[in-house]
Image (cartoon, rainbow, N blue to C red; front, side, top):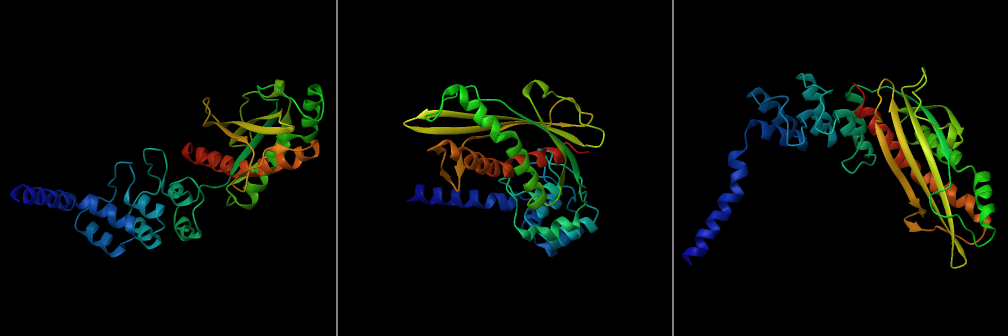
Length: 290
């Protein structure tokens, strides 16, 4: 019985320890995250550090922005909080309000927060794209293997990807990226050229379509190799792959029963990849901005 009582007492003390050891900085961070504006003001008046940071390097204004606490963000900015401060990932308050922790677009509850923070301006993006068959052997159940590349070429998979990216940027991307005169090249022409003078960055997309005859059906695949170059920076700000097998509406629908199904499947795939590609590019642009 005594041993059990001691164990219970130890457990209770352990649960109280974070509360007992929490200082003004931790209290301020928690209050900002929870949108407790009155408590935030009280803690600041009592000397809590305005630019306190948590383990991820996030300040009170960053946490308030991330969780959509507009009144708290307004108060912290009025007290002199730095909206341009960056956490360990290189994200500032605007980025944390714009993007959810999972990397998806947040709900409109954050719109009021975004209006309070300095706006990043519209990025001007040059896009160069080219396509090449994937590393696998191209085959089809419906035509000879040497005819498959020509059929895919006529579908212009690189253009499908670029147009889907453009449409998403214009309709769902909060008008933060303007795509300038996109170019479609052959693979030999696609190089790590610097962005043109009227662009802030250059996005190079290598699109790799694939096809293979499997059990009397053609299995389709597409990969996007994306590289983003900021003006004045030699190293890519983004280097990532997107895609793979076709996924539409959460279901795998990558099998073509005839050649006529190639075009709608590739187009649907391009649309499904526009969103993750766009937000990855925008995140990289925001992270690499001064």
